[in-house]
Amino acid sequence: MTSQIDTTEPPAAPFFEDLRVGEIDDSAPSLTLTEGMAAVHQAIVGDRLRLALDGKLARDLLGLRTPLAHPALVWDVAIGQSTALTGRVIANLFYRGLVLKRAPLLGDTLATTTEVVALRQTTPRAGRAASGLAALRVRTADQEGRAVLDFWRCAMLPLRDPEGRTGHEDSFEEIPVELEAEDLRAATASWRLDGFPGGRGEQLGELTPGTRWSVHGGDVVSGAPELARLTLNVAAVHHDRACQPDGRRLVYGGHTIGLAAAQATRALPEIVTIAGWHSCEHLAPVHEGDTLHSELELERLEMLPNDGALAHLRSRVRAHGDGAEEVAVLDWRFVAVLA
Image (cartoon, rainbow, N blue to C red; front, side, top):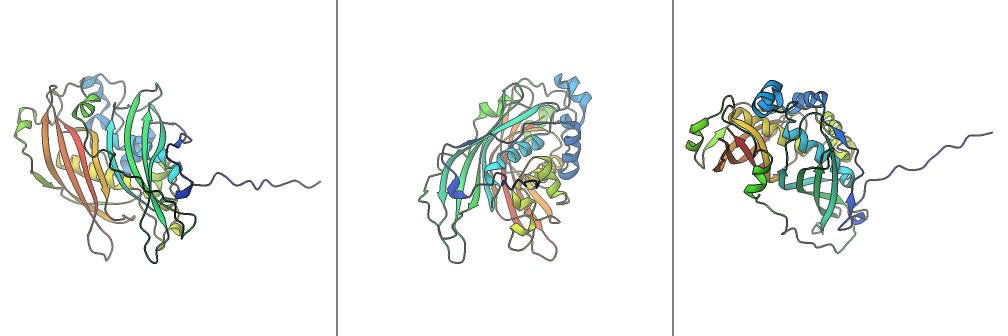
């Protein structure tokens, strides 16, 4: 008697023409944020947020039962969970309107749904296979069903037919690029920040828009596939060098953002947490082994009633690879809570 071999193909990542506006994917496993995950994430992208590092401070200052989950770990997991629809991604162009509705703690479990909200085929170019842009709305909740994250991302995907035309011409104009102040205050409104170590206190108001900080020292990009695996990111370009014409894996965009966030906390140690992003534009690819440098600019400052402030910051990141000229790779406009 001969045994039969099951040759059933696993679910394949969709091409651009397989997506439909209104389609919702919730297939990614829920993921519990653990101390081990936090330690690996910190080793890869860096982490100097006190409330994510110091359990005693988190308990004494805010009454938290465990340290805060670093916001970069939270958004990396949410983005990773959203990649079932973008496993064939060529590039991620932008993120917009990311708001942390609440601040998860280690031990919380995150689940994400991803909705296709707009599709637009790119203009055909000679010598380039057909592709399209998919605007996705990503919503993440915790184990109690409470909203944690809500944001949009835009992924470029290939068409199955390199010469194909889909007729998709949706506008992306409805995707917001500015966050509402009340949304930004929600996650930290109950926090008392007057006892935050290293805070500016009454000197917060002396920060003036237009102030710039050139962050001292760069950070090498390492552990790229490990970060993708840690956060459930299944986009093949981050794992398989054969997916890129030049044979080099593309670094996950959240990796670049995480290093930019770590550099921002070196420049401004009084950052308590990051409340949201207005927008994030990926300007050029980043590869493992590149060294990233950033410049930080204060765009505006809003004082808060809990002895803190919302700092609207812009991080411009440059990458330098071996034997290559430095190139701009990221333009990230985010909002930090300062003490």
